[in-house]
Length: 382
Ligand code: ATP
Ligand code: MG
Image (tube, rainbow, N blue to C red):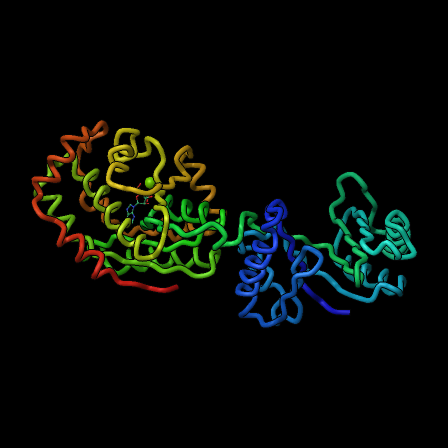
């Protein structure tokens, strides 16, 4: 008899002939997540078994953050021939639980002498005879006592939902424009959940934005990397370019032009990182730079796709998501952001493409500034 963790996966079932590829990638992500806790990881029978870990609860926590995981169950693995012993173990698992329960038996080994209804009845009867405080409810039980008969017998009650999605790395790579706000970490999470590995680009305007606001962004990146198994962050010095925009462009266009330069620089970093797309936390109409016209004007300077997974989300929906993934509290820390420092009083909501371009041309040669921003970016591997 031993404790183990059973990891079940979801959508990669659908992948037909490519299934082994997705399974093995998920296996390597799971291995990575359980590494701090020791233990062996084996793919068998369309699930992943983790055995011999030092800290079961911490290991479960880590596994519920791996994209591609459907659910995580701490289970007992034991010989299947002694049914009395199985009943005793099941009774042990139900210790401390109250209310109603139902036994769910699954007999994968068809040679096993008892069929599923028989296991349900006998095991249910055994528990009831020793725990008169419990009741059976077959429709909406408080607890599901699962018994699977495979090479061994597996018993479990607790089931923790995983995040779903696809294993990171199965769908290419993208660069996330990561601010210290609420939106961009959620946007990054959503795309990473679909199997995309991330690098992050943060624009830092020292001394207008200080060390603490940079630390806040790195903390957000660290929370994200708990889900996607590591992340490289570029902290781009943006002050000079921002000052130039501030001094030389019409005030109402400064935010928009700043966003266009962010996209241009992010694109260059994406190229270095072999990232095929950019990700932002924008949503239609949230602020002046996110009207349809402004988004279109921003997109004009980018060649590849820009993913904006929050495009149709209300702020309240984004906040709920941020709370769920654990970034909200950090995002709410009150440190200044480079956008807020230079915000114009009346930003343009219906920018004209030709006026935008003229304004940029008047800035003169900023190529050297852009190059310096990319070259002097601080690279931090989390
Ligand atoms: P908030 O929650 O305050 O809206 P935000 O991160 O969405 O935070 P916005 O001003 O709405 O801030 O910016 C829109 C998008 O532009 C962000 O989601 C992010 O992708 C990108 N962005 C803004 N500022 C930065 C920055 N300093 N560095 C990198 N990306 C940024
Ligand atoms: Mg926003």
